[in-house]
Length: 203
Image: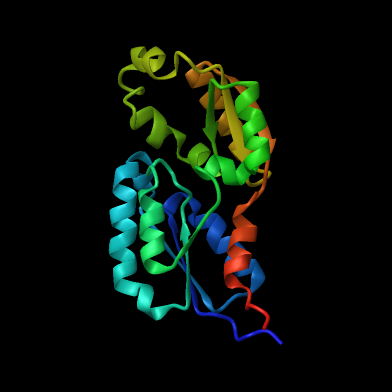
């Protein structure tokens, strides 16, 4: 028979908060807590490992199992070192685009067009704040070529089927002067990783 459900924590990127909470809610888990760090860390990979380390130092003792809700995300292995110290698990792949699309599909997309800029539901929702304002393109549109001159395609890896997000993705492609491609990938490898954490192990 299975062991009792382990008290589990998902410490994730704020850009995944909606999806992580949805997975926990629809599975009816009461033994899994979700805690997310600011999504702004997405733009500063070197700040992710110390932020995760500091948070886990506060709460890790309260949980049987921990999933760090990041892939490597540009930390060049530093986040793996944090996970090892706490006996935590991490999401698969190099970044959220890969685990949403799944590794094989992402490799195909990259080989098909290396000059691709990727968006998820979260990044589509907050495109103007994160990309246009964050990179200063709203104030200095002449910087477009400096940032995106080598890109040809905008790939929207959609978690949901939401026409309002499709419209935002189309607007984003127009602003960046890129060809839009939309793939509905759902949760990809995110949900299986969370389910593996949450399910009791069988003896």
